[in-house]
Image 1 (cartoon, rainbow, N blue to C red):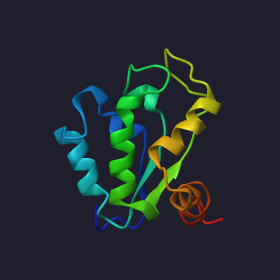
Image 2: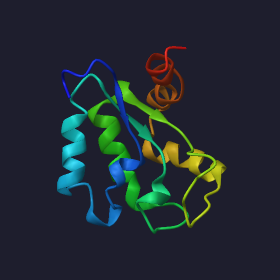
Image 3: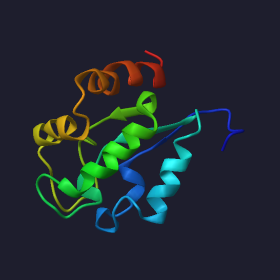
Length: 122
């Protein structure tokens, strides 16, 4: 991956089921990937890895660990229109979750504005 000439963006928490916890080997691999400058993470789709509707509290430790590992390479999204899901989330509630995942307002603003501006070059 370190030789790739492009950035990569991992989304949906790598589809690591939250029930396995952030110590799951697959999630630990994601954290190792986040050490690479070309690897980004999109905080999106908690309903794809958790059954704890509607707040998906078991996803919070995953989100916090990713932000801690690479605060300048995390972006946020709603995944609207939510293709291929059995549970249709409320996008407003998804946006509200970001405050739980990233309590620091400065960091939240980076995730919502500065980081995506760098990643998508706008």
